[in-house]
Length: 352
Image (cartoon, rainbow, N blue to C red):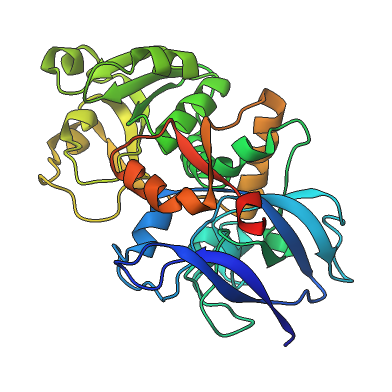
């Protein structure tokens, strides 16, 4: 298969800073779209992968799965987009497309194993996949998304992960007018959950461990803020919420939140992978038919639905634009929650 060298930023080892490297991309095949990457969002998953926090990282690792750019080449069988169109790529670039999950437009749960935009198994080249911290990307048209014309391109990038990660549970649990939704954590995921739930017509509450976020939360669309470390405030919302979206990316106690679910309510974890500490108390689950669930990004159709909804309601992420040369500093700031609310790389800084 014909290939070409592309400039990128990647990590050579778990303890190594990201730096400029060359990677190999395939040339466009019949169903492929080549995208010149203009902006790429920075996700906690990028940092975890670069530093092998979850294990299994193949080096060199080139993160980035919140990609927005311009179509520069299409294969001769492509019908979805044309050269010059703006396009987006999210967290997955391939799947088997034949299993029961894929046939339900749930490619993220592909039984054969979905192919992540980075650190996945590249079916074409036999290497790992490389993400959006690079000049360009080549993706099968099925996994390429259309960008609404009215949306700011840079601020659209985080919708491809932070947006769909929170949109998918909102849609699965049928949030709409009259729904009572709470969001745990006000970060990249949390601020998008508030914006999207509000636009769907829900009454939205932010759970925060510390005061000081009320102004931001209300401006984003929240109706109220509850300090989760204040027992009286927690008691005041006992049995209230139909859905809680928990976006916290680290070990934390979810038991106080479970008690604020209504009968048949669900707390869905979207931010943390791993064991829960302390142990989950099942009493409120049994006595109230309450649930604790998980959710993973979304399929391609659902992601396009989310982008179209954001276009209709003019919803984008709150961002800070950085140069690719500042990515290592950005990672350290992310660990300190020092970003409101998502870093986005201007990829022109790699090409110049």
